[in-house]
Image (tube, rainbow, N blue to C red):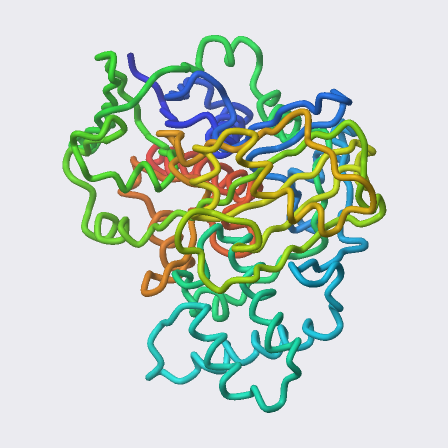
Length: 463
């Protein structure tokens, strides 16, 4: 069957592409989704004690609060509850219940400036964030206090690892200090689940379209763009579809698979051009995970929005253990009056946690939570965790800059140009700037590709 546009993937980017095309009158489109659900990397689950509150295992915040179209629509519709969780925060370490922020945060700014200055020298090769911190501390150790030497690098590590989802010894310092992207406005935490944000975009498509033009459990195995007039897509079930245009929103972690024996391998005919094929190995993925602990009651400070847990060790080698890695803990009691804590984790902890039992996970976090507890520590009645690493269609969380890889904006530029005018790419990792890796970045990319196709069709019609 022939369509005007085929879209691979029913996440935010795919739905936005289809929605904009539909509103412009381009209704003969088809969305192919490999999994049995919609939403891609957006996934929400209701809290046990209050179903009006949800935990998100993908996107958590509206980033770029001053220019986020998803946030603006949510406020206009009034159906998304949100909370600015940028109030009171506490740094916690193994030997200190509350590490004074004023004593090290000014040093963090100094390290950031030092990192930018370091790479102004063209002779400096890319190094890890850990190495750069070591260079700074060695050079300035006589000017720093003992606590600054101890905690400053761990704070840098915390922010890096719990943003990109990778260890600081592998993370590119050039990416971290030279990219120079600042979010525009505050971050608002979504309280009732990003599924509502996604549904707002899905509702732009009529129910008839959703029923007949979105196919779940439909895996694409072959993309043939050898014909300059159309693209042929073949599924694992043997179904064949053709289209004037193809928009691929599958994560780069899947697109970069080059092993034909891999169940998620996509064959391209002809092979992807060198500018894309050679760039694919550069598209590294981090592993940002979440663990949710649900308790019967709150036994920690109710007014603290976030607990920043600093590690006692510098390396994450071996099996995960308490205080080995930094953790960011979001306090749902302060945010939604629900006695739950949501812990953000990174590679390799997030991968190990996916293989752990609820009891093993609690043993890993109990000493940490006990450190800032104000009452008797109780065992959670429910433990939830992300499964992104084991998900064959995701294989991580989102892109992360490792040492020696191309800069993010360079990768985005290649992907945004597509294979040709007929084969295009969309997704959060194809957007440069502060929206990269964010839900509204996926939104922007879908908007971009719909606009491109409409413009290209108009030009072709004139020809």
